[in-house]
Image (cartoon, rainbow, N blue to C red; front, side, top):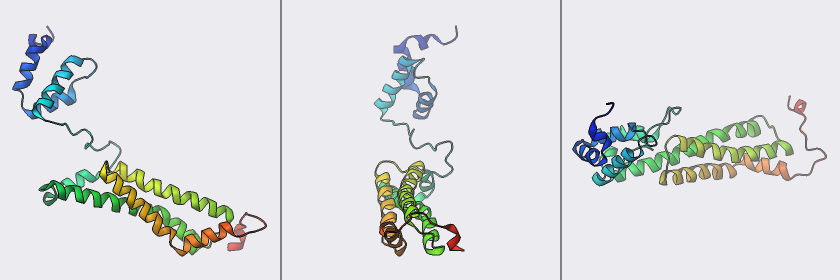
Amino acid sequence: MIAPRWWFNLREYRQHLEQYSDEELVDIYFHIHPVQYREHYLCVLRELRRRGIKPQIAERPLPDVRWWLPQWLEKCAWLTVKAWRYQMAMLLASGLLSALLTGLALAPIWLLVSGFNFTGRLLSILYLIWIVGAGVYGLVMTYRAGARGKSFLTALLGSAGACWLFLNTRTFQQIWHDLLKPSATPWVNPLTFF
């Protein structure tokens, strides 16, 4: 016999699950095959719901992400004492991270336009596409860092705020002016910059 007798009788299996501690039950939940042992998996789920336990699947870091905001914030003991402190810190961190990443993605445009004077109609169109891409980049990277739910909304506000600040600079005004000014050719001669 491969498994004990109580494994085959679901009523006995449920009685055995009631004897397990919460940690053992969560361990069974993460290691049972939900398709192959569907009935047993449902028994484990029922027992978890009966005890009011919610396994934290979404809080696990993704394998290819090195930085995960919830883990960083949980290391601060004074934040985990009260739930509202942790939530406020998560909202603030996700908004600031999104604004920072969006600003860093917009920095090359500022350098090219203000520093090297790379302007022109075609470049202005590319810069406008880049501005949208920078906002999306800030959002996606903040989502990958663990901003979910309300935190993602503050990340959206942070990214939109960084884009809005960039739209109020002289760099963007120069891009917009170059886009709208009439010219004979939309192409930029790279030799005129040297």
